[in-house]
View 1 (cartoon, rainbow, N blue to C red):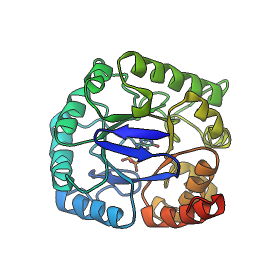
View 2: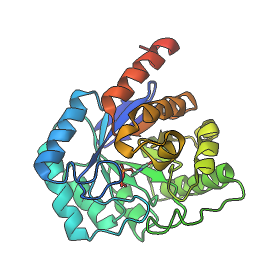
View 3: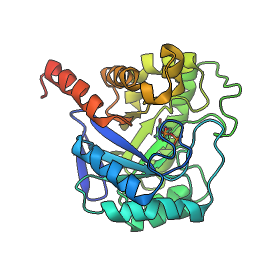
Length: 275
Ligand code: HH2
């Protein structure tokens, strides 16, 4: 199985690590640390050195309670970083929900669009369909501003999987082939700890979507609730969560701590006989 990201063809035989580069003042775990172009590029290069297979660059925090960022500001944050990283050897993903910015990011070299709203904005599907990039379609209940107030599901696994199946079908209808699509249950996006745990336990069921499966648990509030630790102290819990996600079928893990995750996956790969 492969994921086609623009000119890159990534094998999904072994788990891939997507390193997070937040060019934001307010991201929940690393807000403000890499808010300038120089800091963000240096951080991205560090993650590349640690073995990131994909970099995900974001200019808008989607943490619970976050306010939306204007298009101009997102441009100002992300485009210089994309520019500086062009030709770095791995696909650059841009984490955005604005169709206009998706096209600008793709023109500036992005090989993947990571959309926490699963290309539901008007014209988002058609914008991406006419390009060769990959897309990550993520599930979210509600909006970042209010999504953690009272997340409610009858059956979280079935509802999230059905939603992603519909979004994959919509993407395919618009001309985005399956080998360009990634699905992500959206841990922490309108979900309680119990919802997140249910999704992690049943992640294997999402493989039936027939597209690449991504999981982003890194440093999230759920891990804080389980360990009592602050976001920057959640590395060990994050590595455990990434490993469990891979064990349960995730093919891409979106993480802040690339080196630590890589080490854990080296052990996992060796045990699986695919080192
Ligand atoms: N999580 C975050 C942001 N984007 N995209 C996908 N596909 N899956 C995720 O789980 C996911 C995501 C939140 O993490 P982070 O980027 O570190 O925080 P913030 O949104 O505060 O910038």
